[in-house]
Structure formats: C-alpha cells, structure tokens
Image 1: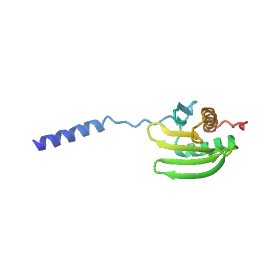
Image 2 (image 1 turned 90 degrees about the vertical axis):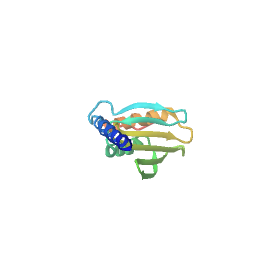
Image 3 (image 1 turned 180 degrees about the horizontal axis):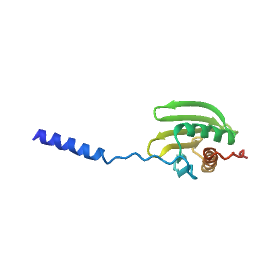
Image 4 (image 1 turned 90 degrees about the horizontal axis):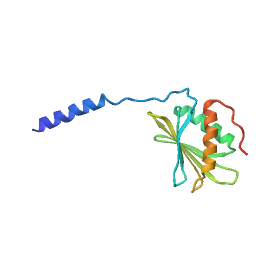
Length: 139
C-alpha cells in the first residue's frame, strides 16, 4: 500500500511538471510599465517589461528625472532596494524584484504613508526611461 501511494505521488509530480511553462515578457513592447496598483498602505506596484539590468538603469534614470538624491542602494535576495530623498527631505523607497514570469516588479513608496501622484509620476518617468524616450525634468 505504501509503495502504491509513493508511486502515485511520483507519477502525479511527473505529469504536473510537464504542464509548467515559463512565460517571458516580450522585450520590445510599447507598454514598458503595466499592471499598476496603488494599495491602501501607500505603495504603488507595477510590472516592468524588462529584465533586472534594464530595470536598474531605468530606476536610476527616473530618479534623476524626478530630482531625487540617492541615499542607499542594496541588493536583497530577490532584487534591489533603492533609498532616495526628495527636495522636501521625504524618504522614497523603490524595490525592484526579478520575476521570471513577468520580467520585473517594482514597488514605490514615498515617506511612511505614500503618495499616489508622486508614484504615478515616477512610473511615468520609468516608462520613458525603459522605452528610451528622453525624460523631461520634474517640476
């Protein structure tokens, strides 16, 4: 009876692993930032249509366009965390996580409560950087 249960488990694992496929987002798309979502905790999340290297370059370019001062950048197990400061001394946290199914995921939070307008502007600058469009300086 034990052998039958083990063989059934192994057979089901073999069958289900054949059904798993990895979906890679297309690299050249007109939409570089998709699935934007603003949470009640003040964090804006979105999917980026790029790999982690391109996301790193785009975050840095967007921060320059938004006139942010970089305080810290450190790697975590699944991505990179950026700490910036804006003109009003508010802390901006940007987290980029590498996801093999979507490309990269980003989370942006201004201060402790977040700011939807700022996050949308940052994502707009990030989208322009990913598409290679020269960013206009923030006002």
